[in-house]
Image (cartoon, rainbow, N blue to C red; front, side, top):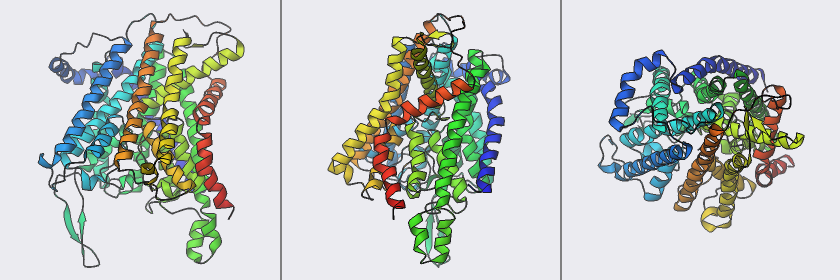
Length: 572
């Protein structure tokens, strides 16, 4: 790593740590209904929403009711987005007269945005009208982000409460997350993006003259408003096909840096929210420390391999200028406005979180440089992770870690004063194993069928990596693509939609079940035999659980893809 890379990583972490602590306290006050100026300011709007929807803010729900309501809410969201796409030709705010989206693509996109995945098998500027972009996709960017946060809050309440029959009211939680957290942050961020040059209008696409005396059509539209929640809500779906490599979405190095901060802002802040609600700030610091150690290690690894470049191109020596560029790092697929370090850090952040936004082509990374984003996704995106999903994923691994430690010392495992028993471990196993099952089974189906192999542009190990990345991205609700795989086909649209839906709610339901079970338990007193779940020892235990359990499922598949490709590349 060069000096710029070290300074970039250090500055990013320093600003992030300063920003997330007060935001964590703010989220606590909002979600727990504690006296706060924001609640007083928005109380009238909040009460109007409850009256309109017939919701009683004081009526709480057991975990099963909470889960069913959340599933129903998201199912209706998927139907709405599907319908908007299928009818968009006859809807307003469609100046380019975009055609109705095909059934399989509309189905995939609806599931994608509802599950916070934002996988895009289409090019946004040539497929979606303005109304569908705003009323369909941008609205789900808010609601899917809110879904992840409320599940995390419900699990934290399960750990904090004792002998309780409920974990909160899902309608109140969704309203408060959207009204007090996502909307204000997105508004502020959208204003910043406009100041940097991100466009925001409803005009028809513009025909402009080029320097070659030809013409070019420039796609424009309401970009800044969608870009803001795309990052704040770790959604990742771009208005343009080039996503955050497009100058209308990400115009300057400063906008690029702030977009990276926006991705980690809420996931990092929720660690402090966790500490506040359970009444022990050390617990939040412990989870955050584990995330930081993993993130920094993977970011340094990715930068190292990308800055070493491609040994085959460097050794050719045919074009001295090109060879020198490769010797200084792999610029293939990178946006020249940002360079290697900024592009690689962005890739690591966006796959550590469940964001999926990209400012470089992951398909053009070196084998092991490209393996880092893939592994970050396969860990379950618990290294900060998506808004809410990262924290509840890490807490699931924390429960697993104390269970393993309990087996080692012959004691019933406890976490924050709650016994971890058979039911919690069954639900933990489901939450951890559902995504590897979807990824590996889906990859096997794709490589064994003609329809799956037909989409591969690059044969061999790299083509296998493209399929593995696509299924990993879908099942873990990331949404970024390795590229090189033609996935906008009926086969992949249906396969990936199934992986996205069950990868999202196949984890959420067990997490809420754990929350309900823990909330009903009595709190145990701390004794001399209680395993401390804070401090360096537990950080190491937690990191070990994430790496051993989260990653070992994928080692054979990784060996067939990026590892083989790396060995072949460096043997030449």
